[in-house]
Image (cartoon, rainbow, N blue to C red):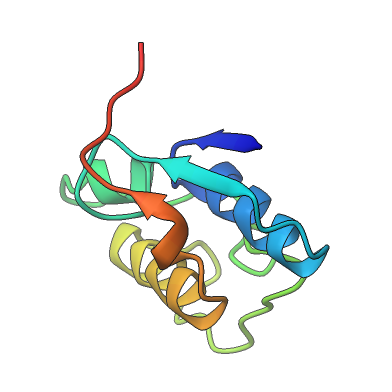
Length: 100
């Protein structure tokens, strides 16, 4: 059994790769009610990434349609939600679960 902590970029990437490798005995534990990690939590004006969008994305889910060179918070958050849905990992996420 595998426990993945959090559903930001690292957690989602791990969950998706586990599924792609045929490993299905895992759960993702997320303290919030939605995926996205820092891109869910930080919504202040001007919030954006300092890494070029095409580099700050999953290699298995490239996005040729980024709106700007450096992704804004909302676009990155939407990208993560889309990946969770597209790769079918939402059913493995336990939202509102905080581990200590």
